Image 1 (cartoon, rainbow, N blue to C red):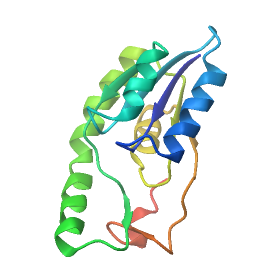
Image 2 (image 1 turned 135 degrees about the vertical axis):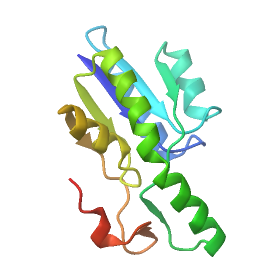
Image 3 (image 1 turned 90 degrees about the vertical axis):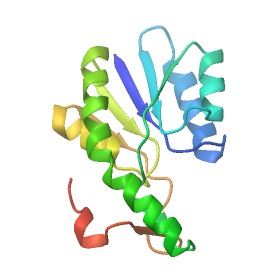
Image 4 (image 1 turned 30 degrees about the vertical axis):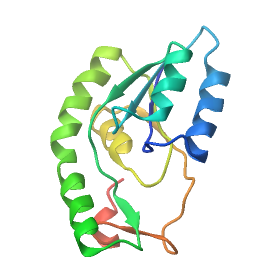
Length: 148
């Protein structure tokens, strides 16, 4: 099975460490595993390299953002998120080239994996590690994010 994981962190935080553990369990010779992330110099990329797992960098934004950010930061998040439409087209080409069977989004703060899966009619697993409401909010407002 060809499995594609989407990640969101630059650091090697809790969700990235949990993703590495999951990949270690699935990396049994029967599965081909790939990871896409938004940062070239992400710490997880180094961990994946040690395991001979391919990491691809595509710049994309979050659909949920921290509530404690400035107006300028929110604008930056929003612009980056709106650029996802362009990035999705590039990712779709890569997903087709890799013949992906299933996509796994490793966080609830990004929706790009779900969008790609939906466009290609590929199964999608969404690993919710955070919940909107207390410290996160949808970048375009809650009503505008009921897409899936």
